Length: 394
Image (cartoon, rainbow, N blue to C red):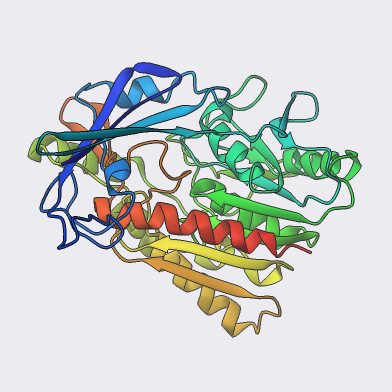
């Protein structure tokens, strides 16, 4: 038997555990990278299976661990191996930020965190989180990414002091200030700008790439091909420019509420994906609302999944690829598809991959989709491939 346990440094009272039983081979060896457990917390071959399958008995675990996130302290994972009367253990330390990485909070021209070193050869990546993100939630992503050899600027664009409370009618001029700051800052000036975005941040990343030719490399987790309505239950765009809304696909509130009510009545998780499909089917302005990604001057990498519960990212990604081919796009573009994944994208091995649902109220649960195996693979594989993609920035 092999078991694993951990708690996150900013939520030490929330404990996570997993266990798996294996049969040793003729040499008395167990290889987790080759063997499927006989039984336990997961049922597929994965050397990190014990980590990705961890669960907590605390019913409020998710709420507790997404508060007050701090990257200053290490994460510790204890592994215990037992066979008969024999027992051995080891403790693994996860460092979120390399010792040479510095952090600078920016609050004047915009709100963000710059993770950097004095090494002037580092390229710069702009990180744009999704609808559930904030600087705290994004800090492990930005810090770990910077620890792989980049300057990383994590930018908040709503729900922070001085910014709109909701992801709705966000002015693109705000990001022009971000770009101007990057170009004059002694650490980041003279560097090509790459963007890594997730979900609504992926939508934003593609919009920015289509409008600003100095953006040279863009990777996106769970993107879409269109500009959609803002997330404020109002019939307004997510984005504006010069005081005017960008054309957008409308999502009627009654569709959202109907989906929630059906889930409540059936006591089953609901998804937003069908609402986005319905909005696209009903839209009369698809041509205007489509992101003109063919105008970009960047290399593109799309990470998408077929079981996403947030929106139909796979359909949107296929449309993006078709558009690029039709326009003989002159820069590189690739799409990675995860068959059994939802929207699991984050730094691997921090939060449990099994968290595929979010409880909004009693009997009202949002599903982000995917299986444990599919989401675990997508989270680790997309992270590794995104880092390699940005390492080729010139």
